[in-house]
Amino acid sequence: MLLLNLVLSAVAAAALPTPESSEGNQSQPFSQNGLAPWNAGAVNRFPIHSSCNSTQRRQIELGLNETITLAEHAKSHILRWSNESAIYKKYFGDSPTMEAIGAYDIVVNGDKKDILFRCDNPDGNCWAGHWRGTNATDETVICDLSYETRRSLSTMCGLGYTVSDSETNTFWAADLLHRLYHVPAIGQNWIDHFADGYEEVIDQAKKNATLATHDSETLQYFALEAYAYDISAPGIGCPGVQHEHESHDEATTTAESTPTATTADKPSSTQDVPANCHTHEGGELHCT
Ligand SMILES: *[C@@H]1O[C@H](CO)[C@@H](O)[C@H](O)[C@H]1NC(C)=O
Ligand SMILES: *[C@@H]1O[C@H](CO)[C@@H](O)[C@H](O)[C@H]1NC(C)=O
Ligand SMILES: *[C@@H]1O[C@H](CO)[C@@H](O)[C@H](O)[C@H]1NC(C)=O
Ligand SMILES: *[C@@H]1O[C@H](CO)[C@@H](O)[C@H](O)[C@H]1NC(C)=O
Ligand SMILES: *[C@@H]1O[C@H](CO)[C@@H](O)[C@H](O)[C@H]1NC(C)=O
Ligand SMILES: *[C@@H]1O[C@H](CO)[C@@H](O)[C@H](O)[C@H]1NC(C)=O
Ligand SMILES: [Zn+2]
Image (cartoon, rainbow, N blue to C red; front, side):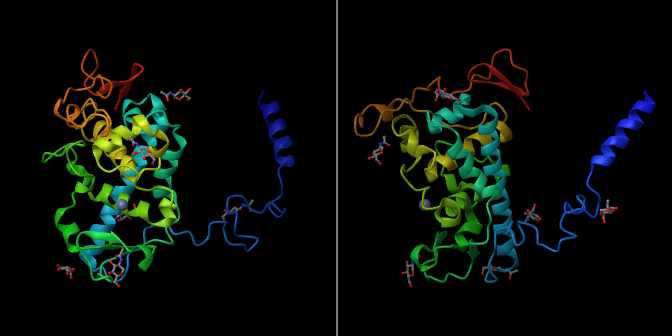
């Protein structure tokens, strides 16, 4: 047996290219031919302008890091559960999953060369922050109010926050996700505002699901709810009051005033499930 192994490895070795072959030294693939790596010059961190002082820079950077954390988890949740996730269905209806996966992935892994965050109020209209639009389409301004009000994702489900009843920009992570979707390098003029606010987002998933996977608000709400339910308060989350909801033009009178919890939107997490686990729709057990 030993002899056979030796013979076989000698045969295998003979079939390998020599170090001097055109394949180069595979453990140092770019050292011999002098070409730059295919991705030379990639920008992997969000550029922050010199107008941001050290405390501003640090807070924006921390916020952007949390944006990546939020988007990365949203992508992972969809990749794991696909459209069997009750949270996926709630926000994206019957849409295929690839568009939303891509919308999160581009934030995490897309090149960040054509993006700039700045702090010097160049348009003279600072409030919390804004995308500079036609003034400078790659640029986003962050203003003082952001540093005072935006929260870390670590406070998710605390301090009275619920997904349905709080603003998405409660957190740096979702606020900056929204701002990034306005920048063409990320949103590609494809992610846009179709629905405004939680109720419209929920309606849109039922009535206009093809818009949902490139709707800026929907992508924020889904990411927040998935993070709350999977990470912050596993198996519980903080979805807030769920309305059995009809579209605004049909039923403006009754639907809003009857906050009956919908079983479809509620993960069934209580019976016979270990404390660190929860069931997803379809009966899948998910343990953390
Ligand atoms: C490939 O490069 C590495 C790092 O310089 C070196 O240690 C190794 O010996 C090289 N291999 C060959 C087959 O030349
Ligand atoms: C950065 O700028 C802000 C707003 O002008 C200011 O409050 C803060 O003290 C500055 N930080 C440093 C380290 O200069
Ligand atoms: C943000 O993330 C990068 C990459 O992981 C890290 O090097 C950097 O220190 C982080 N910044 C802050 C302010 O936490
Ligand atoms: C979920 O996705 C599968 C394909 O993976 C599809 O056959 C099914 O119709 C989808 N279900 C819903 C409710 O969208
Ligand atoms: C563009 O700049 C002008 C002032 O030069 C300002 O009035 C306008 O609000 C700016 N646009 C945005 C989107 O900030
Ligand atoms: C669906 O999309 C159309 C076209 O954008 C829009 O007019 C309509 O209000 C949307 N309906 C819902 C319930 O979102
Ligand atoms: Zn916007």
